[in-house]
Length: 462
Ligand code: PHE
Picture (tube, rainbow, N blue to C red):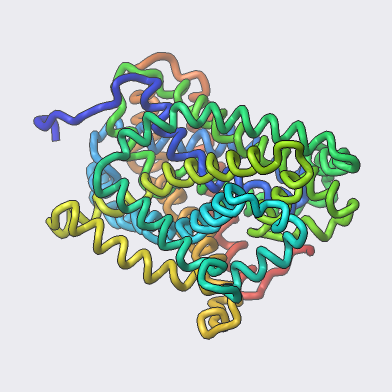
């Protein structure tokens, strides 16, 4: 393990930006706002932020430090710390394989919306935004109004980038595009905040209403945290293994979190007030779920002076954010398959892409009225099911055992001393208590409640 020279990021900034490019994706712009809308607004936001700086911080730091210490990616790293934890590496790496297919389905939706806006059809979409989106995802329309070709385009685009190794170029590009996305998000957020009636939405989003608090709020916030920060799936372990010893680990993690949470926060600010403005304050519009971004934003753009331009630009940037994330997901799966099968990169990429296509087709047609749509695992459409399986079941399990491994088997000190190689560890006390006690207890609670809920033993409020 010591002999081999491992390539590393050029500097701390390289590490932070590469991690941010992987972290900022559909999770921030598409998933966060609809969850916040559905789960009580302000109370969800509050729970999310508290969890991000304590729980999320602890988990991300742990993973990066494990990678930096062992200099191995996830499968090797866990077993290098303790052989009994070898399966954990495997379980963690199954997560990207589950996410890739449905991530590309949604990437396809974004591609479609970008093309429609660029072609000037934004206003037509906005006129019947609900119906348009529902017909689209239930695959009722003609070929191009069907999610399948768009899913395929997005998947192939991702595969092509992985295959040709242009991911490095994309990473450079994304360090330029991320700030543009940030700026554009601010413009759109200001616009939607100034719509008549939007203030009710701002209140809903920013003021926590404690009567809306339930276990569901914490459960959803935690699942979102894993997803958005790319934790509990081995990715941050791999990134950590490329990090230099002298780079300040604690500060880097703080910056990645800030960027990731900042974009998610802004996305909520773009979408939630707009929902209030355009539904005349009807709160039931908040329960829209995965379609929220695709239904609400077209209406905002249709109302804007330069709506066509801003709308196209917006969906283009979301597309880029999604693409950089999808590349890092697919890349992970391909490198695992390549390592284990000893196939070349080309062959591994093709095999993984074909499998992702097959699995993704389920999510693609899962909302339709056909045979696939009528199969509802645990009462969920396929896309929601895969999302649930990875975020609410496997990730908490991985995170739980990671905490046990670090807190109780190798000792929290191992991680703290790794962090201290590059400077003082300011949140050390919190980290140690968190990783040994609080995080594992929360994780068991999360897992138990999510499983019980889905088996029908537990029901939450509306
Ligand atoms: N974090 C990404 C998002 O928010 C999703 C992702 C997960 C990307 C894991 C890469 C790895 O969209």
